[in-house]
Image 1 (cartoon, rainbow, N blue to C red):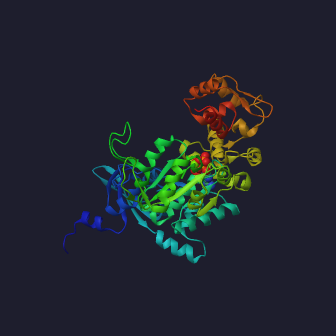
Image 2 (tube, helix red, strand yellow):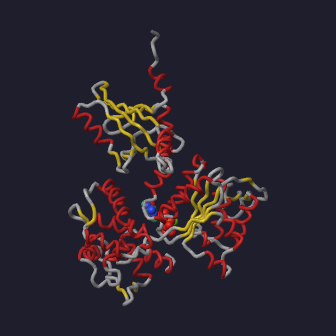
Image 3 (cartoon, rainbow, N blue to C red):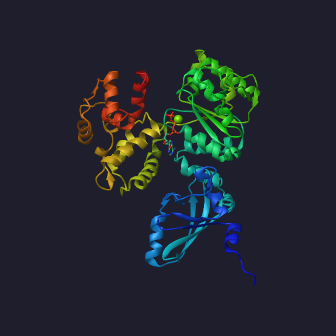
Length: 461
Ligand SMILES: Nc1ncnc2c1ncn2[C@@H]1O[C@H](COP(=O)(O)OP(=O)(O)OP(=O)(O)O)[C@@H](O)[C@H]1O
Ligand SMILES: [Mg+2]
């Protein structure tokens, strides 16, 4: 038999082949694996180290590769088979992985063989009458069992299959950006970029040049030609966040982009053809803005071809336990604290809270609880005061008070209605104490992050 060149054979393998050591350092990766994992490092398929949280179990628990390698060494077992989810954002793939170990020059190495079984899974899931892999991944990313969330999943799938502009509305922290990411990732545009622009973060002139780009000399400081975000999104999707904040002049320009599918860089008269889908988001009532003439009706209809309205967390409070479970699992992984869940009373407090900051507020509350929690159960006193005692700060929980004392911030005062009375200077001081960390500042002040954000906005911070 002719001698076979094994490296050529590995390169031709229709499965991913990766060789790593027990610290997950990569020694070899064939092109198939490079392609499969390539998303992780942009255009570079080579990875120096496999991320420890590269895989999920199909029941959404992070699959700990390091422990698995250890077990292979101690048990002497050479092989394991697992159906896993390769965690590369929404582009997740379902894979089948097997592994064995071998020794090379006294060093134990591990050979992973990773086969992409996503298409097969589509067939299996479809024959079972479920909506397919897309809906499987959606249900893992946008958590919720409430009919309103299931409906959001359906809308995302439909939006992803079409090419029309989408408007996502909803209160702060309801997952609007998550929806935009999902639509992009599940659409045919997913190999091209998703470009995000926060329209409220920049002044009118800066936003114009950010979106449309400029040519050298267009204005002071324009030292070279620069493509705008629309050009960067070529072939892909542009996410225009906080669209309600856009000035009338830019609204006219956006309308032209949508109608003519061309853009002109600032300072240039040459139209450039662009192909992208716009997903816009807002927490404002755009119809109200239209009625008081701050938002153009024609632009609204151009953007609102397909609209998705995110439910607040209050409207779907029955989802609170599974959302809590989801975030607790993530936090167990990132902090290493072995927390099992919430006490019955803590869960009740969470169910009773009205969550003005929605899912983001809840995520922050659990992050806060993870800092304070002592045993393996989160108790009421581990939750932020803004949730346990929203109306009064006089009686913040002892632990929160301790944090405030330790940081030597002035005790914040709340009015009878529960509103925080604080001057701009005082707020700056508390923010400084926490290195401008908004979560910590909000905790110290005993207000939600949204309330803090509103205060900061009011003071132009
Ligand atoms: N249904 C959900 N399942 C899991 N995580 C969620 C869900 N909804 C929101 N989140 C998480 O909550 C946080 C806020 O979500 P996101 O940024 O998408 O909200 P938003 O509506 O864009 O908020 P804002 O209006 O303040 O920009 C993110 O960390 C996101 O991952
Ligand atoms: Mg957002």
